[in-house]
Image (cartoon, rainbow, N blue to C red; front, side):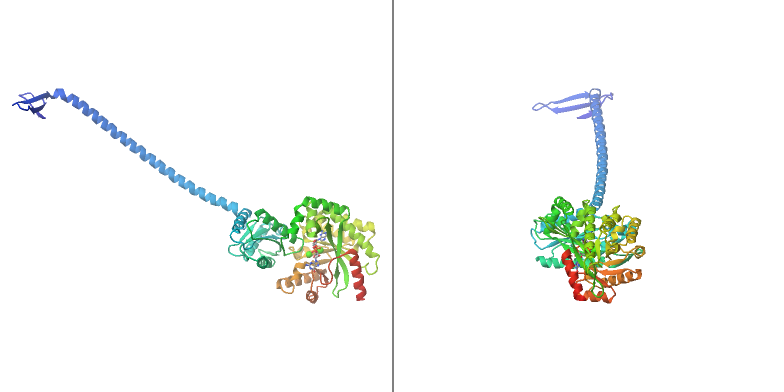
Length: 532
Ligand code: C2E
Ligand code: CA
Ligand code: CA
């Protein structure tokens, strides 16, 4: 193809030429620009328009994609940030769900999960593990005396102390209040060896808790009850072990301060059927199936001066139920006033009988009063009327109160004590040393006697701490003009030591176990005849 002009026309044309085969011809076709160009330009226009449109379309698409991409990027960033935030929140929630906010220790939930894992592991490893329940005593009292803020600080402090003696892989959890629970792993394949280790750890822990702590202007000495449940097979269940450790603590309660009990399956049988037991107890009170045993008390030269009455209940089908199980049972089920009245009636009869017997009529009889019983509105008259109706001299009776009677209403407690004291009935402060005994209130109480808890007497020859406590109580009693009696005196050495520090009254297995009423009378009469 070519372009050329012909003659003087400036018309632009297009020509196409071809040689005709086998002939001497060339065929040419000529088309004027006016004929071909408009179609061409029209096509070019369309092509250009399509091109432009296409480019615009691509541009728009790219822009759209870029924007979308950016948005996705932002969304992705946002999602990652959200996930991170969620992760942090999850961690925080986990903290809340698994940690005790006050002490930072694992809480109940965490403990239960850890215990389930350790039980599961017993499939492959049959070494003994232990759940140890530590219940700090008199914490309510501490809070009410020093305020919750200080109580909290002290709890934190004690939580450190408790952690000090357990192994790295062991777990110390706080279940709220003053309850700590330990999970000790892989103690030993032998039960006796495992118990030995647990006993050592518990004693160390209790020793630490019961040291004197000076803290933020508060001087306090803790004490605790401990219950232990051992396990070594995957057949144990979490709830079962927790219950066992709880029952063991219950066994420790009422046995004084710093007592360690190992779960006893017999006790579970008793407690399992609580409803039935409550019915039995009601019946025992109303039909006089309960009994009082009497444990003599001695002076410096081992003369008998009185006795403590201790409740005994031999329930049909169940057997002997110790007072530290049956008193809390009565308190929990609204029977404590009936039980308390039964004891008061019974000791009045006993004192009346003694008053008529040779060698018996000068003895003072002490009885234990539960805090709940003391708080009853008619408590004072419930003590005095049986004495009066039987014509018993009121100064033959002594009430052993614990510091827990002051918790809810100090003024009311003092008022009742004053009324009782005025009537001639004597007052002793029982389990002394296990509470948060404060000197300032002690001097305001109309007391006759302080009774040192047997937990301090038990190790008084081997534990310097206990020596310090016992000496302090004796001096305190002296300075306040009160008698001081030591309970749980089991050996001659303990007696001599106590005597040497001027603790002049004693009670314990050394000379006599608690005895039934008639045996007690025979014992006293024989003992006195022999000594005279
Ligand atoms: P408690 O007032 O500290 O009584 C002393 C406990 O020590 C008694 O336990 C007694 O049998 C025991 N005991 C006596 N001598 C020794 C000894 O030398 N060594 C040792 N290790 N223990 C000795 P029991 O009779 O089992 O009483 C336990 C607690 O139950 C009593 O502790 C008291 O708090 C409470 N209780 C007993 N009888 C009554 C009652 O009639 N009413 C109330 N409210 N509580 C009672
Ligand atoms: Ca007592
Ligand atoms: Ca005691």
